Image 1 (cartoon, one colour):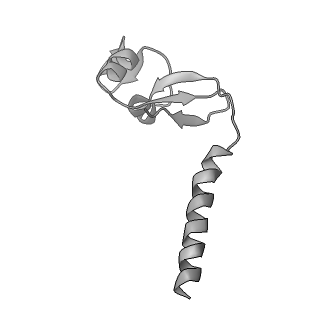
Image 2: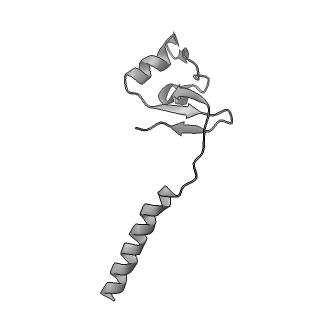
Length: 84
């Protein structure tokens, strides 16, 4: 019984490792956005953002340089978070 459980666990581990490697490759195109500002106002998809205290000219670039999360917004409204 113990050997059978060990065999099933090792098989599941191998399947888990192989599954991401066989994932479908896909090309995604869109606009790079500052995720935090976009969540505050869905119109914040360009360099200038409309914030509570007024418009900020270079908000997207300055936020990205500070290490804030960025995402890719596609034309159909999907959002892909950029990691790495």
